[in-house]
Amino acid sequence: MKAIVFVGGGRITSALLAGLRLAKYSVPLLVHDHHPRKLRQLNKLYGVKTEENLQRAIAQARILVVAVRPASISGLLREVSPVARTLPAVSLAAGIPLATLRKRLPVRWARAMPSPTCRSGRGLTALTFAGDFPATAKREVRKLFAKGGEILEIPERKFDVFTVTYSCSHGYHALAALADSAEKLGLDKKLALTAAAHALADGIVAWRDGHISLERLLHEAATPGGIAAGVMESMKRAGYKKVVLRGLAAGLSRARQNSKLI
Image 1: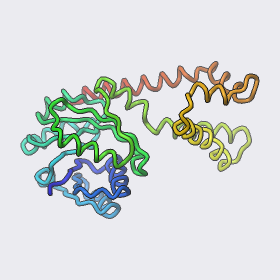
Image 2: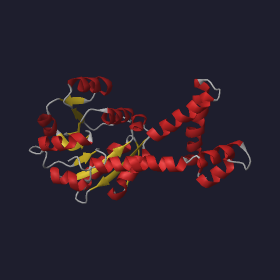
Image 3: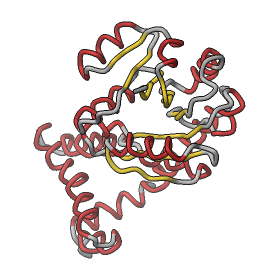
Image 4: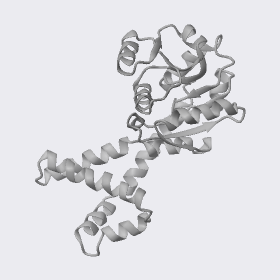
């Protein structure tokens, strides 16, 4: 049986492989990378088959997963063009549209944006498929990413905004900022992180699992004249929402810059 071949052995490939191993995914997998050290590490950690030669790797593929940085896409597609013209391909490169990918390599394309938290089975992956993407391959791609957590199929026009919004970096950043502020006000590091993690993680899990609207939970948590209400009002006056919007807009601008790299 031919393999799903990952081209690029970096962070997101490692996270995906960890999640697939956790889920006992049985389909053959193969990873290509130009760096032998990365391949040795992936083989050691996940028992995955590796191949340093790109042409030999593609010869073993039935689906190609392109997991390189946007700046590397153009050169890679030129390199694979002679040998990958019949393969369905999935790009993990943020910001680069299907139409642009197809111009560089005229195969059936999909885009996927998996979260690194797929390594624990709690990931979230956005998918979008070109209209001619084969139905059998589409089912296989969905199954692949579903092993790492939830999948959402969304229109490509919404893909970049989703990408800048769903990143777990927002949670890590908020956790670090909240815990750091608590330390400055007198908590030790461990206690600050415990309190901040509860505020963010447990509160959000309660919302996801409890089927209670966010508006109702906000109302419940912020008693008029109480501590939480005072905190929220102060953050609002300081421009909290504007800062978040500015950050997402900067990420969206970067994604659109990526589309010009190839």
